[in-house]
Image (cartoon, rainbow, N blue to C red):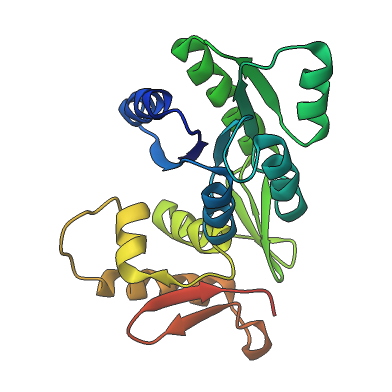
Length: 221
C-alpha cells in the first residue's frame, strides 16, 4: 500500500515515514500543499495523511481539490485544530478521519488499517467490460467470471489501478513482482498474453495497449 504524507514539519515527516515504512508501507512525502497536489495529480495513492496548516495550499483546500478528482482514496487529517466546528469543516471537505496532534503512532497505524480494510471490502475496479471485485477476489468479463492465476490477477489489478498512465516493465517488476534488481522483463509479456487470451478481448476491446519498448497502458475505450 502506498501512502502520501503532506506535512511541512520535518520532524513529523521523518517520524511517520520511518515508522510506516517499518510497517511495510510505501511512503511518499510532500512539504507543501502545491507539491502534494502535483503528486496526487500524477500518481495513485492508497491513503493520504494530510496536515491542515500547509504552505502554498492549505490542507482544507487541498482536501477539497483532491475530492474533485478522487472520491475514493481515504484522507486522514493530522492537525492541532480540534474544535467541533473545525472537525466538521474537515469532514465536509472530504476527509475520512481526523487525528489531533500530538497523536499516538500506534493509534494512527490502527486507523490506517481500518480504512484499508473498509476500502478493500467495497472497492470494484472497472476497465471497459472488465470488472474486478476486490472483496471477492474475482474478475468478471461481461459479468461472467474469468479464472486468473494470482499473479495474473495482481498484474491486471495494477494496470487498472493506474488506468490512463503508462506502466513501464521495470515499474511492474518492482511493484507487482517486488523485484528491485535487473531481471528479464519478458516474463511480463508472457503473463499479459495469458491475461488477454483468458479475457478473450476482441479488436474493439483493446483496453490494454502495449507501448513498444516501454510497457503497457490500460484505458477505457
